[in-house]
Length: 414
Image (tube, rainbow, N blue to C red):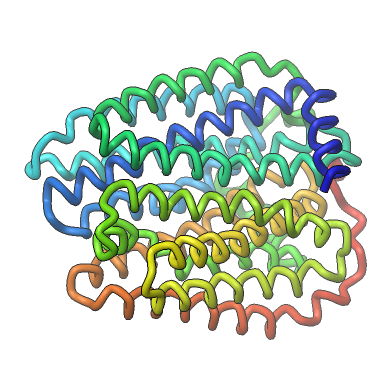
């Protein structure tokens, strides 16, 4: 572990622009959850129903899924730095809209604002992921991915826990203002990046639909890439249970602070997962089995949550579930970065995220419909079982890919 810490420090100190991008991601992810947790508590207080929180989360993921195919094309064809700066500013405007959510009659503004925030992230995330291999040399890429993969988990821990505490202390609207300031800071950090975030772009950009067809054709012709762009959906089909967190916290009499702690436990797992499973990235034969195990671990841990009688045990099980989920996400991202050439990477990542977010959106909408009518623990168990069954089916379908030859393409190869 000490060698890993040294390698992390080395990468961060030697690559200034990667450090700036990582800092911006910390701020974006922290600010995001610092707003979402107070919003979910606010919507539950205003309406007395869990539906609106589910709709807010579903709006985020549904907009992501709808825009990602086009966003990936944009990430490959336009200046990625300008994309990141522009989308950060749009995110600021989205958070400002949340200040208008003051009564049950305007509760719909919450999902609308989160949908706008999701649109901004739809363009931000593929551009950031595709840019990363251009900011560090290949020998530092696995460490850089582990660092970048920890950003979301780190700031979910801080943003969610602080969001829950601050909501209880000063109310949600102060949290929204703080989020807007954080997003402005992220915009400044990205604006200072000077290293080119992509290779030479074509003089005549390919039309978006044609470019997307090229990416889909590339994926279809490569079974290993196809396996990798369907792996995140295992966690996605069970991710609707996140909408149950405010009700689960209420069942344990923990209130908004409990909601924040549940999301923070999710973030802690997502933070630790990439670090613990980093060794899998250096052994190609371990990758697909490791992805299957991580998916199954997520489902089993949430089955435990459904049966847990104590809030402390629930927090531990949520952490374990997202340790597996966070490792799954980082392993598949790293593998795609190595497998896919730079000219297609943004579109392939967009397709990857589109599939995952579609699964999440459907799961959230289903849970939103059922959360006020079905017993809470039964609903959580159903979501966990869906992930577990997906993991088993995915492993059966992809078991031959573990023996596939090493690809010749990689970052920068077209």
